Image (cartoon, rainbow, N blue to C red; front, side, top):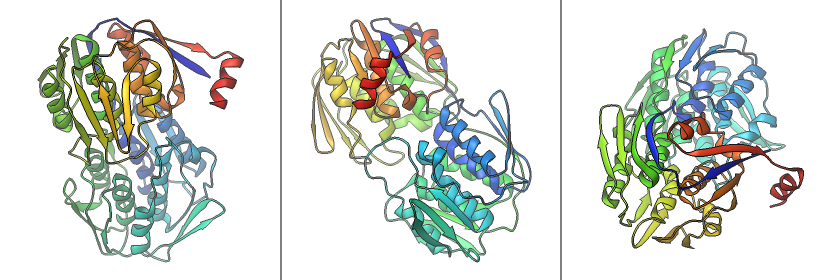
Length: 428
């Protein structure tokens, strides 16, 4: 096990390059098995979630190879082998294997997915969609079994807007007989990215990016080449870090339109931001003003950026309120920030942050991916050295994190945990 050491107080300056979108990649890799020939996915982030999914594809017979940031998947010999647990438990996005295998083979058996512990995130909307398409869904010995004689298009209304359910139903429906209509669909850019791949394969999909998606099933899908969009959450993380500690930072390879809600709030706080076609220039201000934030489904403020923004608000004048309407357990980073001197109180789904508090380096633990990103930003802001354990969460979603921070002038490094420290982490 490793910990990340962050020496605070170093101003950030220079350029950082954003990688391909993690939340696209974890759906695009499973989607590749729907094709009958080779699929090439470019701009793939080098993160542990992608490695886990590639291993799952190999488990069911796919041939997977890499060349830089390009993954090539040959699904010719894929078989509908059950994936009861093991690697499936490592990440929640393994549930996309359900939709992909159901669409390809009309059956699948997948262990209940793992990933970050963010409270109840049921897959009932996924199951509702699969059943509407004609699948019988059962829970047997901790695994979900999907079986269908044939899949038929259906009209499916999602009771809650869900990125995962929208994508999973798309994957299952592209080869179903007839038309599928997904109502109250999610609109995230990553959904458009997945639909672009499927369309390149030969799928017939309309309305992506709106709340009604129409899919006309086809009999076969062919291989293709696809390049993943930039990761808006990684971009947002570096933008927030620059807002906290940046003298002059250029965040490159982004789509500014995907970050409108974040940019608006940072400008409201007093951060200097200039947006170009595919990059954003940020300069911090010593006089930041607190703002209130409420997370919403896209194009609202992203829940994945709530935790890093909570850290930035500790530096601002006044009291800010952060309300998370998406996940009710996404304030586990608050106790760790309190260890560092933050003045934050959690009330239900909201956190009240009293700003202008100087953070101090401390030993803290990342409970999930974005909490880890938040603690790293806190470490950059703090006096002294911050020790962050739980880096396996952060490695799930950020490519070459230390290298990118070092390029900007941060002082960060990894150390192995001692046996005693590892035991303390396991027991905490």
